[in-house]
Image: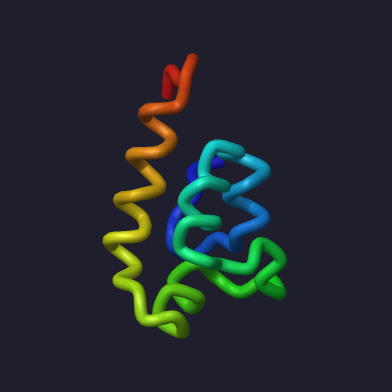
Length: 67
């Protein structure tokens, strides 16, 4: 699965466990009630594009990542 701004945090964590560090650093609730990442970013005052970029960096720098 390719995660994007339409996916929820639990979906991100299932597909990319290394994304947890980004969500924790930003103070996101990992349960999030199934709301999209874009919605959560807007509610907490973060740029969705910037958060997505941080997630992509975390995934790419994860040990053993080949995607």
